[in-house]
Length: 523
Image (tube, rainbow, N blue to C red; front, side, top):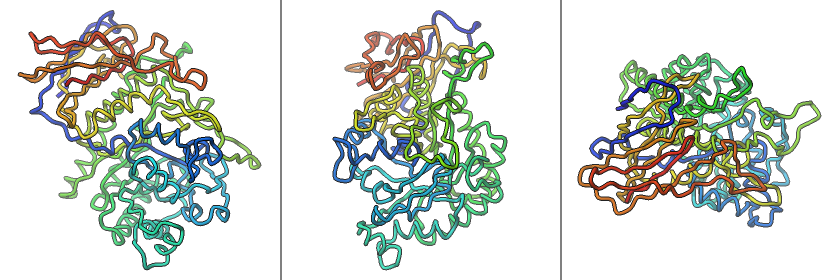
């Protein structure tokens, strides 16, 4: 239930917003998989990111322990691997066996050389080191197909007694990896994708691969490729065609979305629209959910399919850090690619996207922040040097810590509006409430206004008498302030002293600065 109170002009000096908390109206439990991330063989995500044998903190496997500590602090759960565009040309067997015998290959997706020093076994060992995070494995449906997917599943999940399962055991993994969640290719709707296919052709291939994989392991959870962006020309029709062919044998359809502040005609960035990126993500989710529902009805199915939003982030596509190498003689190993440095404003948008995922927890049962280290990532490293938190690290870590194991409550929100060139009038404040696993209440809120402070009220359930209200806000007067190698803690959340509980009215009040993200913990 979304209630909006419209106001007459674009940006006010003052905004008001009110959220009503009612435990009788739930959206869904928070699935831990909402806090997934993504490790692709792209740039320095793996090499000098999570894996750097010569680093001072490296363990016996070559994993950077400073990065492992930050991944634990971040609260990431499921890790999608090994791509991404990379997977559409990947031969999984290159990454197993003795490292000195593994072949070097051209990676056509990112015009790089892949050494294959890090593969499936290393990823499984790294996940154990991070605390037993779940692996979400992607299969290559770009240059490969059914047989290769079956081989990988047999190698990974069959306990023993066959050539492939015994090869895994000989390679050091006596027990199966028992991978539950599998992506059937990556962004196959995209013309940039190696092996790009039409919806008809991809749907046929994905259906055969899904049925075949279930003959080996009936309980795998399969993610079929949806659209790689809300604005794709084939969006909608793609989902309809693919789901018609695969519906009974898949559990998820994927969504991918990246946001950035585009330039206006006057050369400045459209920050107002950027701050409202969550409006587009919310529309994307609802459009895909409607297609799922229509397909289910058309097929008269009793089966449910959910959304895996397995790539999402702020990404300055087309700008300097995202330019790939060129030339037939130029295939570098682990070049610096997609190393966006995130600002305070980027972190606010990021927090808004997390709120949007939570608000749709009934349809979005898994999500993967793309990516984890160095590549459009919350964690940055320097080869041989330190690791540090980008601005976007903080909304993710705080939200994960408070919301895991909780239940999303229906967002009964009323808010003044702001105008945006791209989305028109939007709520100036976006917010969601989560009943935490311990019974306390978490509320996450963003102020999307560039200029106005928002006075935010949270109406608690009748009879609620909170013992304490804690609020932390991420905001900087300089929207473009960032955390860098030389100033690693420039932008962090700070205690918001305006938060207070008014016992007489039964409301919690807090002031939200312009362009800010706030987490409240009401105990």
